[in-house]
Image 1 (tube, rainbow, N blue to C red):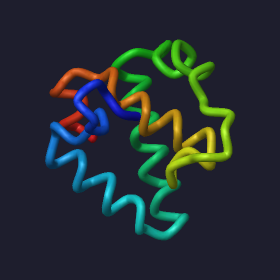
Image 2 (cartoon, helix red, strand yellow; image 1 turned 60 degrees about the vertical axis):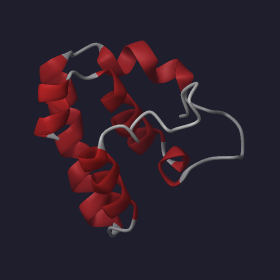
Image 3 (cartoon, rainbow, N blue to C red; image 1 turned 180 degrees about the vertical axis):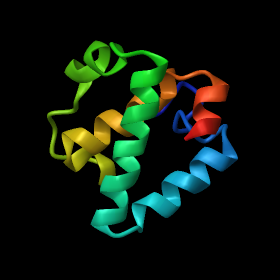
Image 4 (cartoon, one colour; image 1 turned 45 degrees about the vertical axis):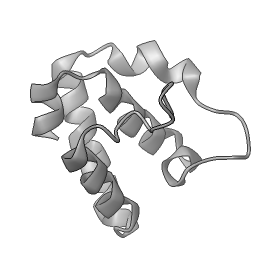
Length: 90
């Protein structure tokens, strides 16, 4: 997701950006484990967070690597609503 400055929402966080880049090239089993861990962090932060944003799932064919699966999309896009300590936990 891009903001008004032309950058993706996570580009202003170099550690998160690097983490997502590594995750992109991880094997499926590792990705699934990490998405589960992210889900747990999200639930601890705000148990309603995922439900609040599930309807934003893109329905177009033009998708990023994590947009192809609703579970990974929710995990990654929900990160933008976390505060810094919660993102640091990820």
